[in-house]
Amino acid sequence: MAAAGDQAPRVNARLDALTARLEKVEAAHDASAAPKKKTAWDIYQLLSPLVQALILAVLAYFLTGRVTNAIQREQIDLSGVNGIRELLVRLQGTKPEEGPDRQAAAVTLAAFGRFAVGPLIHALDTAQREGRLDTAQAAERALAMDGWSNPIPVCAALGRVISDPARSFHAETHRSAINALARADCLDQLPAVKTFAAQLAGGTPAAALPRLQQIVDPDTPASSTSVEKLRSDLARTISILERKESP
Amino acid sequence: MRHELARIPALLGLLLVTGLASRPAQADLGDCPGVAAAGYKVLLDQIVGAAASSASPADVQLFRQRVRSAVDAKIKKLALDTDSAIQLVGCDQRSPAGSTDFTNARVDALDTRDVLLEIWGVTGADIDDAGHNIRTVRLDFALIPVCAKVSPTCVPFFPFLMQPTTLASPAAGVLDLFRRADDVATYSLIGLGVKWQRAGDDQRALRYLCQADATLARGAPNDDRNALHNFVQRTIKAIVTKARTNPASTLSLLEDPQDSPCGASP
Image (cartoon, rainbow over all chains, first blue to last red; front, side, top):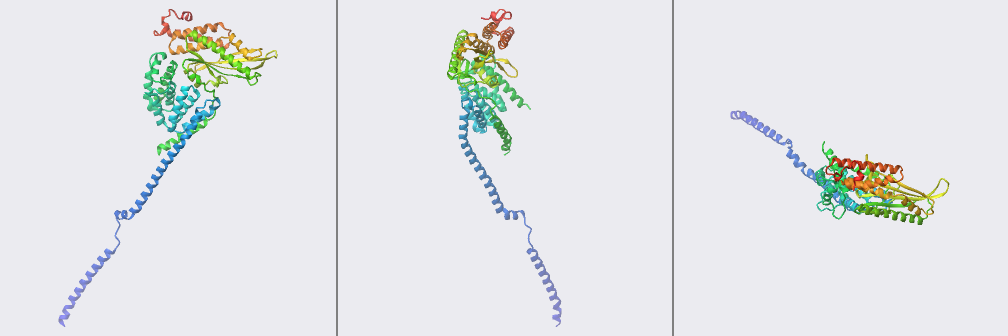
């Protein structure tokens, strides 16, 4: 009996120890059962399919829009060819009663932007060769107006006219191009204009005529009056462009 | 995108200008392909019968032919006298209403094409002071290279010839008109003189201007002729003054050009 009485405290102590361990285990279990805080990686992993889908959708929207726009622009350009053709025919009308229509055709052609540059230069040169002075004047104005809204292609084309080594253009086409360069503020063509002016500088207009004939189409006549007018217009264009160039 | 947006005001401006420019700002004179030819030119535009005219179409046609042949004869003689390539160019589609049709741009374009003179005319019916029905013949001239006013831009002289006639046909009046006046040749000589002055050949310029001076001094004076005569004399004086200060001038060979420039010119 005494031995049983001696063992009771030990049993109790063991029971207490067991209880304490059990509580620790329970506490540990409770701690592991609590929800863990999510990291950025967890959030990324969770949202990545959604984000990828969204990015794809946005890319698809813009790419499709751009491709569609490009296709539509080409379609507009192609449909504009017919419009340009009709306007060119109207611009080159020769009857006096067609005058107002000619002016309107010229400025409407200018609205075709870079696509009108080549046809307008062709119409200008043809009119100068054929002595259709009102048509030439209308084409020159249209080129200048086109240059206001599309300076890069217009200025580059006019610069090629005055620097043409193939001598393809009439003397008066050169003069129209020089005037249009001033009207369209073609600052980047100032060196080309100065080169042209240097070629005609020095001596009387009659003395400089052979030099002009080396620049213009050899099949079209140039006169000393052309030299005189070109010199005057070159000086004016250089002055205008230099004023614009300096702030 | 910003570039595209930046173009919008420019395009709007272009459309505005397009709208404005599509209005008929000036009457169209009509093209004359003959101006593209080389050499000096005298343009002969349409000769029209006035609206109130009782002239028949055949009369007007005859009138046109007479004017053309009379001017052609004058020009051919002038070309021989001056040893210059001058030709008459018919511009059947051109019919100026008056001097206002000759804008600065048009005068400039014609001048560059070496047009010396543009002529147009009208024939019509009128009533004289005694109440008789008469015919009138009128020819208008634009002296393209000759600036009556220089500033701000060159405005040419616009003289005209007017001939009332009791003859039955206005065409007959043309002969009267040209018999009386040698203006086509005189005006062309002035144009040639001004052209050569601008080209830098003082000697040749002086030769033609002096011929014109002599013709203008002989004719019956009127406002147009007086104004032209003054212009010619001023131009001669300017040439001589410039020649005296310019050793390279072709006139420097002359002995004393200031005293009698026209007498000294060859």
